[in-house]
Length: 387
Image (cartoon, rainbow, N blue to C red; front, side, top):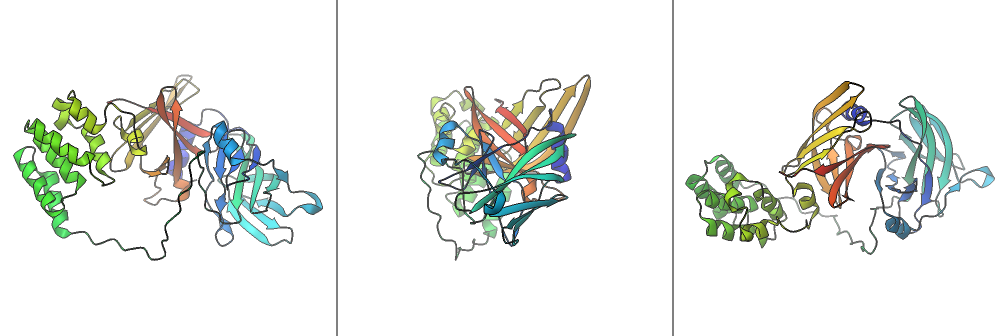
């Protein structure tokens, strides 16, 4: 595990990790079940090797029922199709013939292989093994996709959309130097009339630029041209550009629009009084600030700030028996992946699978919480902090 992420993991660990139990493979899809409520995606194999950790997320009973999980079948005796051995951190799965299926490196040294399981059609294999963590022996489970199936954890009654062919992807056109120069000038322009003129110059080059439309609206609001500002924001509401919603959310907190926040038309345009309709709105709708309240010797205090440019800051504090530990600010990037958010904490400027942590958006009472998992049983749930 890279050093930066490992340091954060140590800060978040309040109790020793618990043992995992393999629950079986899905009979209708690729995922598998760990314990009673964690649905995981098996690792894909490339050139006889797999890397990283399986992506897992807690699932409701109806999602698990939809996956039709089959009871696990241990691989033992003469009928066993697979076997597994461990040496140091390396786990090797072989066929009955002795041919290697996959080699995988665990984050920590493997003490022993506990059990091997295969799916009904032998297109997936799982291994339970023990390792030492925080001074105690625990059981972990990892599974591999032998059929190279492409998978996502699907919600019930949500049909899978076909993936368009990408054999001949169209190259992105080079950036227009005139547009780049105009955007740079507009971003630096002082508020008011000069900003309005600069953003209109951008629109003369790219009439659909969401940022430029937003810039014009903000400049109009600063000049107290309320009707014009609202009409310009209306262009973002009707825009087909995917980033239009990002600028509408930005307007909710921009001081330029402070005088309009009580205006019903403004609140409707930027969506202040409706439930979030997209994952982006769920993440950034209250300003991108999230926190978990800490409790002494039990749960870490977590504060996370997420920005529109897809960067974030994360700070963790723990207190126990008079001692306090402060991680300082961890910096990284975030991205939306389907219905989840993926955090990346780069190690020396590079990002690998091991540097990423998946976060799900889960209901916590009447709110939506961001539940992030940095590894086996290392988790936190932050709630939005209203600006």
